Image 1: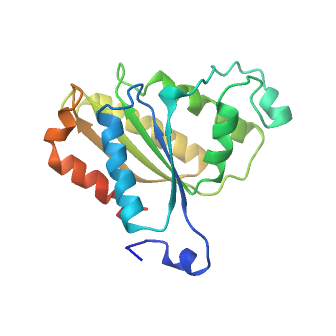
Image 2: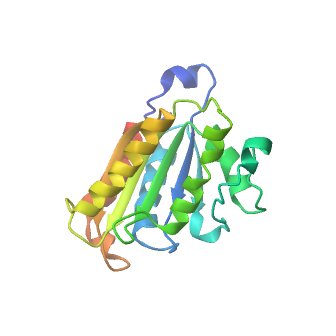
Image 3: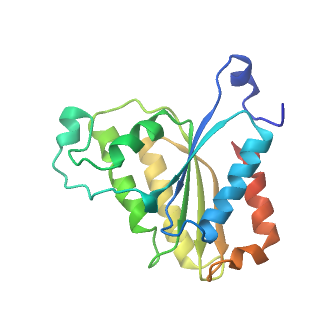
Amino acid sequence: MGFFCYNREVEKGIIMKIVVLNGSPRTMGNTRRLLEEFRKGVEENTEATLEFIDLGEKSILPCEACNACGQTGRCKHKDNSNELMPLITEADMIVFGTPVYWWGITAQMKLLIDKFYTWHNLSYKVPNKKIGVITVGGAAVGDEQYDLISSQFRCISNFLKWEIVFDKSYSAYNIGDIEKNENALMECKNLYKSI
């Protein structure tokens, strides 16, 4: 067995569940490439199960604040959020990957996060999840755009009582630019050590 941070849980027969959310509309872009490195590190070095979801391939309609989820536990829309929410609810860790769009996360990512209202509205006792964030933008690392996204995830995590175990930002503008950054690829592959 490879390196795994949850040896106590493994000994008990409990395997960590990880959901990776690719918020990029590109299935072959820089964000997905870094998330794939994270997946590779997890699969090669842990016993965790990992579900990889490309949000750009899902149909998620905007939250209408209708509060139907408060009555049924499901969004009234017959969209993919109703199949994704149970996966996210049951996960021990969620990794959010997003490119920067106008100083923020992508619409694809925001549409799903807005459905998190279901948890709060139904007062679900969501376990203390671990959170990872990987952000890719065109500006140099250290730019305000990365701080804005980090701040949003900190607020979400504080509200839901989740723990951010990594929050990484990378600069890559054109498709394939991240391939030139071997340190970024290696760092994402080794992020399994944070789980």
